[in-house]
Length: 88
Image (cartoon, helix red, strand yellow):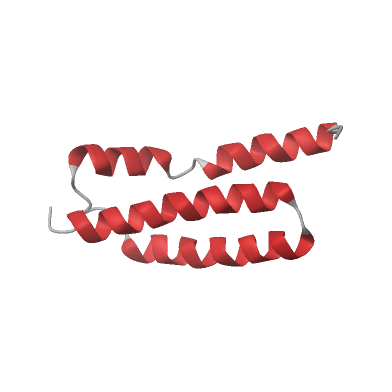
């Protein structure tokens, strides 16, 4: 499979997008505090990523699928951390 410049651009953009929440996940994990994290924002993001993942699957677009699968994973971790550490 040969990648075009547009494909490479899509994969790079997807990779950066996929790790958008990584700093927040790491900070929450390290500090064990999620009091300033918005659960509503992550629930909206979760819904968004499920819809984008479905769209990517229906279009058979690997960039959309991979990006949103990773985002869904990160968002799910963040929601779990929020629920676990909300008391802090």
